[in-house]
Length: 155
Length: 155
Length: 155
Image (cartoon, rainbow over all chains, first blue to last red; front, top):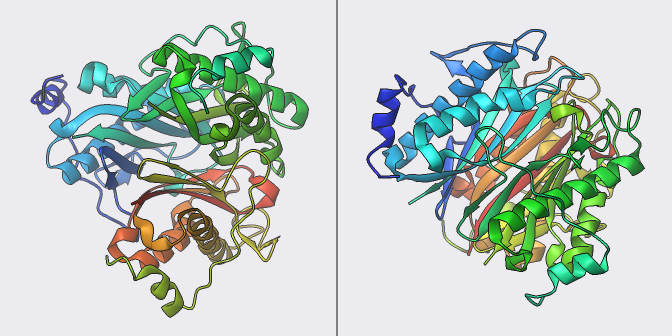
């Protein structure tokens, strides 16, 4: 993947990165170690508000949770861009961890997580394909239906 | 550990690696970054079917969940072998993340996780010993009782 | 950060590292790969006993869970020191994963996790700031209200 494509690709897809999340308390949005950039767990904040709240699928539909997972990606990329200066420094997406606020018996975490994974591939192409763990969580920060964390290879 | 032992060791242990999981949707079984190989969360698929389904311990016993955790290891090694060509490139097991589909009040996640950890040591010897996080999850993909992800050091 | 500060800083803060956890079963407290040190999920053991047990906030208050998260940090640092010989080899805290044993509807996992994050910054200063994922877990090992795992950059 050429180094000048990613931000153009976002524009082509009609996507705009949000203002990156402010560092809150003692943790920070990203920490780089060597060529790995670890991005903190992102929740689907949009314009300062959660897009949805509660468990999947009773309180939040799978479709809405997928949209939330997409927003987590945009928030994570905004955090990465604030750290790196430009997304062109991302060589590949390495690992994505997806936590879905699930009712007991809900087993479609992968469908929700695909909202994040497919957007990463839309943006980064082959370099956007990643290892992933998608699991259910009994409860998430602020009532978020999904939380997504990232490891990128940068350079 | 010598570089030619691992696959012989599997044979000695009477273990056969399954056909590696096919890439499904946008995520992939493994992603390598430098000397680290991140393997996606594995569920206990065997011959295309889950070995067991539901929460531990009411629907799935601890013993059965341990067997499931072992199968997750075999599936993860199959994925790693498909990526690396040979398991001899694995220098050590670095981190294992174990999610156990747990009823409230169940606190024996480490026993379940030992099914995975002990098999890794049987196969890799000292190089198989790893850092680990084992936690309860309210629900897992497809109804799996356990999901295991891996970080290997390769070279 | 100078290389001789960390242990003095612990003393200034009136903190004492516990005896590091013994390797139990097949997993180990830490595994190093290159410049990254992965530390196993720590639970709030103190003097061989859990400091508290159960779900947050009904059985364990947020304040008590924060104290537990602090203890997890001390236990994790004790494990790192046993591996490295000295904490001065820790260059920075990279990632902290926090699992809070949560009742459905509990959404203050970040407050609990701040117990860990703020202590790391107290000890390591700017180098203690880290990427973080904080999520709810339906149940944790031995009944722990919180489990914390760490990735440190060392050298």
